[in-house]
Each structure stands twice: as structure tokens, then as C-alpha cells.
Length: 427
Image 1 (cartoon, rainbow, N blue to C red):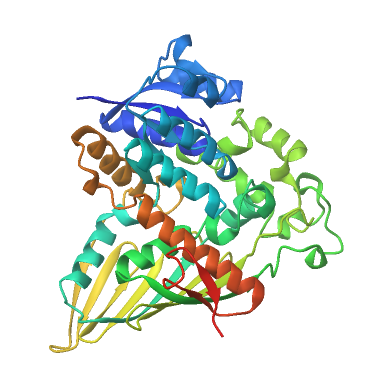
Image 2 (image 1 turned 90 degrees about the horizontal axis):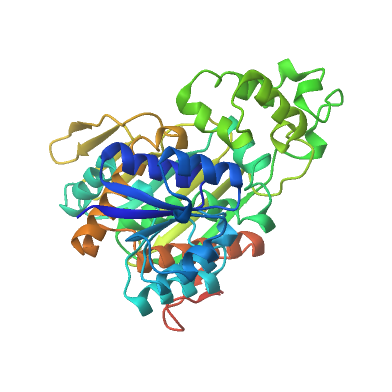
């Protein structure tokens, strides 16, 4: 069977998944819903959709008969719950962009709707699906390094990526989206739990907004990069960041396609002159953290430390796993196994499809995840999807506990004795 897809949210992520499905020939895009008329029509034209399959709002899609096997919900974070619940009620299988929802209540509504209607729900925790992650998990499960005792994990967000998405962009203000840990790094908390293979027992966290603050604005700086007298000497200059992507068809879709539909020098300049992506990063519109550490203790005593920082190049995650018989070191491209018994090292090489950014599909992770989802829809085998509702809800609960720990300066215990979802302050 050819799986058919409805795209709910025709922005960068929704359009990206639609193009992957078409390029790989694994599914057919038959419907699109988006309130933005330019984005909506552009995607409809790209996939040759007739007017009766193009909707200005997801409510119009949900009000009628089911028009596709599955819906990809790629609306803004705070607009996930309503369409996901309504479309589950219509019988659509769901591929939901992460995070599931900014609140536990909304996340549980989505999980309940999927269960009530017996529909497949997968969340786009794409890191689980790469050949790199599968091999690392296989080496752990097979006992090659003995018992996992501790893990060290780094997410290098990248200085320009952070400025683009989490200062100037739509995830810069927590009240309008979610915390940085949920919006960006729920991937990592989920992936760590997947790798360790045990539930979290307790968590602590520290971090804050260190650099992108008004008090760090140079005295000579202007409010917009296009007219700033010190723009050429600023690492976070929007002009410097975006001008280098012109002419690159991959990066013209993201990040330039987020700025403007007119991806030309004149169009980008206009966007930087008039829109939020041209504002000084020190103007103070943002409030999410630019660095954070999370410390995790799992059932059985294994621990993990996670670091998210803006102050790197944009790259693949870096991980070291320490076991009783050996260790693993990975960077998204290779995994090196050190066997303590023989004191030898074995290197497993991978060839990621592109770089680590969304422009490159997260090094092929988006493709792998979409293949698994479509195969699960086609076959009915939900085991093909590892980022289902139970796994995602559990890792989101850890994220919310970590944020509570950061804000209160406490260690937070995930207390199964009270309720599987409860987090209580340890003391």
C-alpha cells in the first residue's frame, strides 16, 4: 500500500518531512493545512494538491472525513495538543513534532487520545533512529562494555543556531513556546534514557541565560544589525550569519526560508531590516537559557551528565559511555569501543547524510525516523517505532522535573510510589 500523509503545519519541519517522503518514494502527500496562505499554497503547488485538499486551518481538516492514513503535526509547540487530539479522534495515525506539548496535561491528552482511538502515535525523537545510535545501543545491550555506570553527553547547539532559533527566533521566549530543555534538548534526555535503558530515579539541573542579555550589549551597538556600526566585529551579526547561506539550496530552505519567502540578497536584507531576525541579540526579547547542565541518576545507580551550550560550532552530539568492562566514545560519525580485557579499541565508522543541522535533516536522522513511521503505518507493526507515547511521555516528565530542579535549586525525585508521573522534591 502507498501510505498517504496530511501535513498539518507547512513550515520548515512539516515541509521537510513532506519532501523526504516524496524524495524517497515512501509515502504520498495528499493534504495540507496551514493558516499562512503563502506557505500553504507553496506546499500545495509543490505536491500538486487540488483545492479541496488544501485547508486554511487544521479544524477544517478534522471536521471532515479522514483524507489520509496519517497526519504529520508540525504546528508550533503550543499548538500541538488540539490538532493531535482531534485528528486522533478522526482515526489518523500521528507523527508529532517534538516536544509533544509544553505541559504535562496537554501531553497526557494526546497520549489518551491515541490510546482511546487505537492509533499509532510517534514523536519525532529522530536521534533514536540513526545507524549510529542503533549501533551504540546494540553494543550496550550485547554486554560489550559490561554494565553501564555513567554517561557524559554534550549537545553543541552552535553559536549562530542558538542566535537564530533561541534568541531571535520562535523559541526565544519560554511563554511563547517552552523551555530550552524541552524545545531543544528533550531529544537528549529521551536519547540518554534510551541508551541507558532504565528509568530515571532523581535529577538535578543548573543553568541560565548568561550571555544574550542587554547588559552585555556593546556601548556602540545599534538595535539592528543592518545599521549597526560594529556589525562586522560581532560574531552574532545577523548579516554575517545569513549572507553566507545565500546560493546554497539546502540552507536557503533553512534557516533563510524561516526569515523570508524571498530568498534573494534583497529579500534577506529586507527581512533583517524589518523582522525579528535582524534585531541585536542583546536587545532582551529572549529569556530561555543559553547553557544548562542536567544530572541524572537511573534505577540501579547509573548516572549521566548532560550539557547543552550555545557556545560551540553546530555539530553532532558527543557522548562517552563508561561501563564495567569497557567504554564507548561517539561523535555522531564514529563509535570507538575500548575493551578493558584486551585493552584494544574497535572503531565503527558511519557516514551521516549531511551535517547535524535541520537543513541537512539532522545527518539523515529525519529520513530514518520517517521511514520507520511510514513502515509502521503500512504494516501495522508499531514496534518499528521506538519513540512512541509511553517513552516520550516518560522522558518529557524527566525534562519537567529537571526544570523544576533548576528553578528551585533542589534534587527532584521521580517518585513511582506516588504515581508514575509524579516528581517530588527529595529531602
